[in-house]
Amino acid sequence: MPITIKIPTPLRKFTADKDAVQVEAATVGEALRALDGRHPGLWQKLVDGDGADAKVKRFINVYAGEDDIRFLDGLATAVADGAEIAIIPAIAGGG
Image 1 (cartoon, helix red, strand yellow):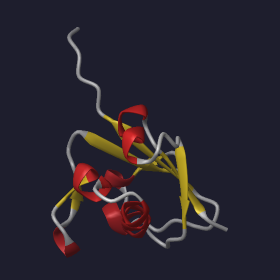
Image 2 (tube, helix red, strand yellow; image 1 turned 90 degrees about the vertical axis):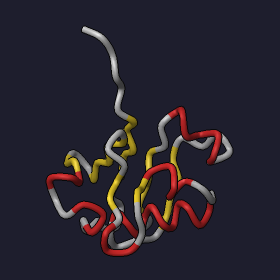
Image 3 (cartoon, helix red, strand yellow; image 1 turned 180 degrees about the vertical axis):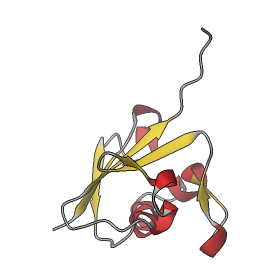
Image 4 (cartoon, helix red, strand yellow; image 1 turned 180 degrees about the horizontal axis):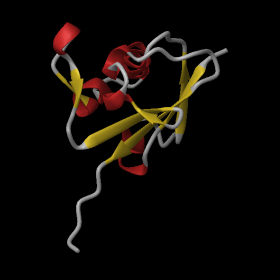
């Protein structure tokens, strides 16, 4: 069963306006790589670096289910079949 990646509105121009993309992966990093394989350029929009030192950009939040991957294993966070990953751009605003 594939993993569903929820695509936020600002990034849908890279996914032919799809609000979700399904991929096969065992980790969040693999899922984002698979997403980039289908829609080139997204990895660079979401992640700084490559390989073991790669990290989600500071103004992007990625959730595996209900959990922010920054508080788990980052891009190495395991995802089960049928899992949902949400990409959420940080929103800045005045108070």
